[in-house]
Length: 394
Image 1: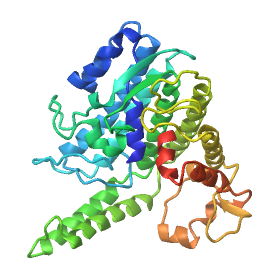
Image 2 (image 1 turned 135 degrees about the vertical axis):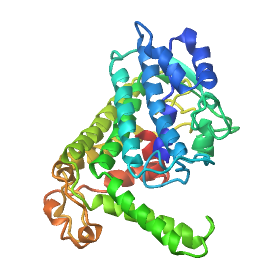
Image 3 (image 1 turned 90 degrees about the horizontal axis):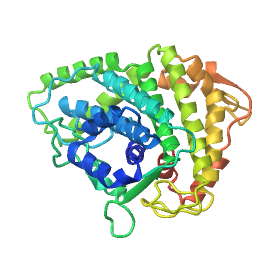
Image 4 (image 1 turned 180 degrees about the horizontal axis):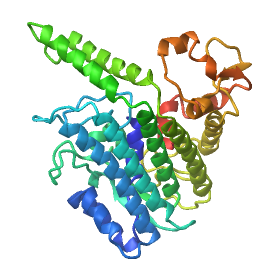
C-alpha cells in the first residue's frame, strides 16, 4: 500500500502564489474531477497549472480505481497489487462481479497515468512554482455521489502513517518544480505495474477460480461466517489460484516490453528529480528533501540518502537492461537470471518449474550478478526501513 500512498501525497497541485490559498480548499470542497476539469479548460496554462492538471489526473486515476472496487464490492484489500491494497468502505448493494474487472481497472489506471505524464511533460525545464497543500483537504469520491463522506478522506484511506511529525496533525506540504519529476516517475511506476498485469491478463484465471469457489460454496449445507478461519483461508487460496493461473499462460509480449520501458522511465525521472532537488537552497515544508532540507512529512532524512538511493537505482537499471543478472538460488555468483529478457521474450511462468529450474533455464546465463551491497548500504542508512523508504523515494 505504501507505494500508492506515497504517490498520492506527491500528486497534489501547484498554482501561482495568488492561488495558493484557494486550490487546496477547492479540492476539499469540489473534489478531484471538477477541479481537474477547470484546469483542463484553461486557454493558456502556466507551468504551475500543468503540474496541477497532471497531479489531478494522477489522483483521478486512483479515484476511478477505488470507485470501480466499491461499485463491485471489492472492499477486502488484495495485498499483492497497488490500488487493490487500499482500504475502502463496504458497498451494501454491490453490482455483480465481472472477472474482466481487474484487467479493465489496470487498463484505465494506465490511461490515467499516461494522461498525467502528458501534462507534466509540457512543463518547461527549470520552472519555478510552488503550492501549499493541506493534506486534510484531499479526498476520493469513492462511492461516486459527489459528496465527501466518512472514509473518503486521504488520511482515512492512507492511515496514520500519513500524519506529520510533532503533534500528528495532517501536514501542509509545499510542492515545487522538482516534484514534477518525482510525480512523473510514480506515473511510470504505476503504468509499469499495470502493463505487467495486462501482459498476464488474469481474467481467465479469475473466472476459473470464482466458478470453483461458488460451486464449493453450494456444496455446503452450512455456510461459514465471513470471520471463519476456513472461509478466510479459502479466499486466500482463491487469490493464489488466480495469480498462479494468470502467470501460467502465454503473455502479451508487447505489453511486457511496454512494462520494461515504463520502469526504465521511472528510473530516468527519479534521477532527474534528485539532480534538481540537490540545487534547491530553500527549506520550506518540503515533500522529499535534499541533505540541507527537512520533509514536512517525516522530518530530515539521513545525509546521503539521495546519493545512496541512486546507487540502488543503478542496480535496478542494470537488471532491466541486462547488463547485470539477478541471483538464482541454484547458481553461484558467476551466473544468474537475465531479467531484461523476461520482458523482451516473456513466457508462461510455472512457479514450481521456475523454482526447480526447468522454466528458468531460458533466462539463465553466465555474467556479472548484481550485488546486494547498494541495498544493504541503503538499509543501514535509513535504519532498517528499506522497503518503506524505497516506496517513499520511488
